[in-house]
Image (cartoon, rainbow, N blue to C red; front, side):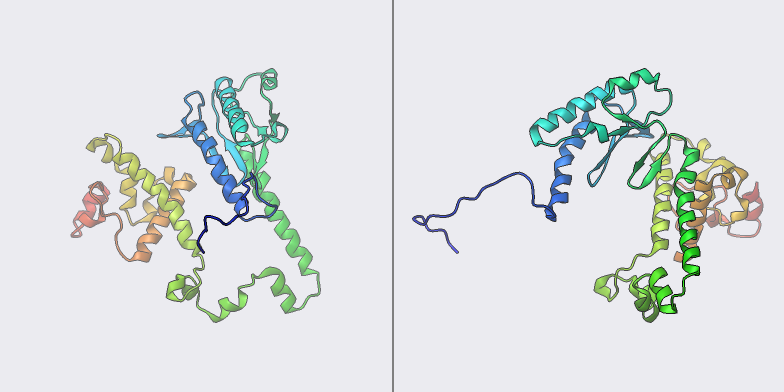
Length: 304
């Protein structure tokens, strides 16, 4: 329809906020928090946690905000100043009594806690259902052990119930039980345009997670000014391990590190799945490179 000049139209009123349960509410809230996050990331007075070349200061997930701050004497006041300024502009409110802070390392005496308007969680806190502890050794006991115990208790309780087979299936197995029985899993994992249901392939998700770590290994070498002497020592070169197909030759250091050990295992599984060598790039080391073993005599130099 076209607007007529002489016709009187209703006045549109613009107000802040959304109705209860509006699907736009989480999206608008996420967009509103981005300027706050950018100000915190860009502030030179706020010091975050540096891992390699990346400095982490803030993470956002829905309406949960997690800050990683060092030098609290300067970082916390600067953060509160930005938040207070953001509150005046946006109308956003922060409940400091519900905001928890967990000190790590040599934070100082407990008297310094009174300088900050937070509820101090010295023994840990819960974030997105995960219990975070200042001691990394307690993470298994706080998170995995209760979950395993609850699953065992549920299975034990269901074992004594008298439901039929249909009842047991409805309790334990997912709703996709019958489609999974009638349709091949590979077909379900195909994209929708290819006739599948885009069912997630958990193995590929696991491989992608480990491949990201390998990519970071390669990038750390490519972005640093390393000489050929640093690439040569075979027992300690991660890249030489990527070109080695024999898992039995892993050193004790690699076997003792679950992150590197499992990542190497996934790398070999990916090579086997793709049925080709995926380590053919320009900077692979010469030692333990299976592509250079053209005859049996090369195995002697490979073992030296």
